[in-house]
Image 1: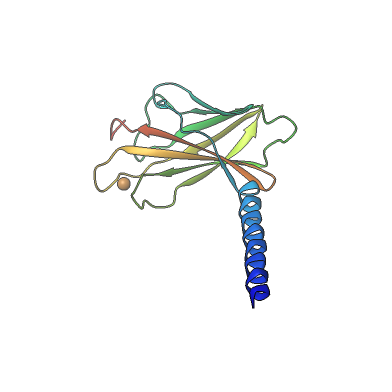
Image 2: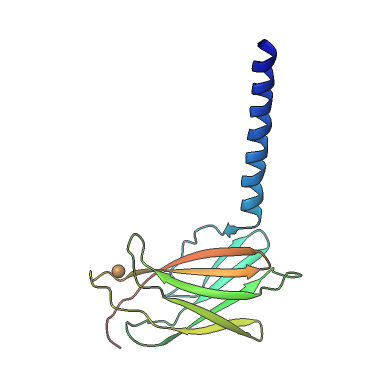
Amino acid sequence: MLFVVVAAVFLYGLYLQFANKNITEQTATGVINFPYPDCRPELAPCSVALGDRQIRFFLPKKAFYLQVFPVEISLAGFVGSQPDAVSVRFEMPGMNMADNQVQLSVNDGRWRGRAMLPVCISGRSDWQAVVDVKVKEKTYRAIFSFVVAEKNG
Ligand SMILES: [Cu+2]
């Protein structure tokens, strides 16, 4: 009987090791979050770094609702693992807004695209730009907060 208990505990330990290993591997092939940057991309270009890798986010000085505006990302430190795709998704923290994702295209090392923001029915103007840099099976993610100051251009 004791043997059975010992064997069960041993097997449970093995199972836990296996489960933990799976979680670690999922993280390694999933999303790698950059630290949250303490800057305002609507005021000045905003950079965030994780190790050698840097993501720099450009917004126009004024981003307006219901008007197309340019977004731009420049990357540094992704040497030897050039990104396959870069996208920006616009969200509001804690609010379910319509899906709004822009795929950027690269030219001269700069990733550019054009975006448009809807008017928030609650009157809020605080947005988050979720930047995803895809490198093979990994996604490097940086989140930039910004405020849309005016409703009309
Ligand atoms: Cu909203």
